[in-house]
Image (tube, rainbow, N blue to C red):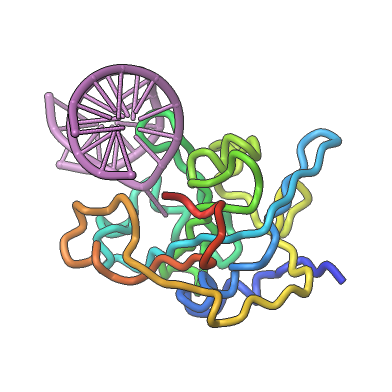
Length: 179
DNA sequence: GATAAGATCATCT
DNA sequence: GATGATCTTATCA
């Protein structure tokens, strides 16, 4: 019933992956604990032309992860204290990823809190999404198109017109979606 | 309810 | 030396 998503799922266009991730489950194991929650909010970051994407300045030691193959985890520290979890999409050498913004779990509404709740930090950067510490499951739940809403991304006002791209996807009426 | 400011550091200039 | 894919707390209404 629960099916682990493979690289094939993440190799598709980033916007498709971002939308399809809604309703899937993020599962993290550390020690003998397993935590999981349904994904209800994502954002897409696509290519060097997207000024909100960390690859907009080309390859750097940090953005290098975005150029890896689909299914690679990109985790970075923001504002000196919060981690954000992304999954790289599309082809190798094309920088794109989906940011996981919220899952249905107490204290996991918002990318920073989500990583804190799941114990995710920079040690996960560069790992894959099909290992045995972190993965995504399809539990067969269908998320109807009508339950999905789209909007501009959050926290990227500096990105000029890229800030207005409707590349954020979320499940309507979920109380776990960030404010 | 809304808005503002402060925390705090890896990364890039 | 500047800045950010955020969050918490404080203050006002």
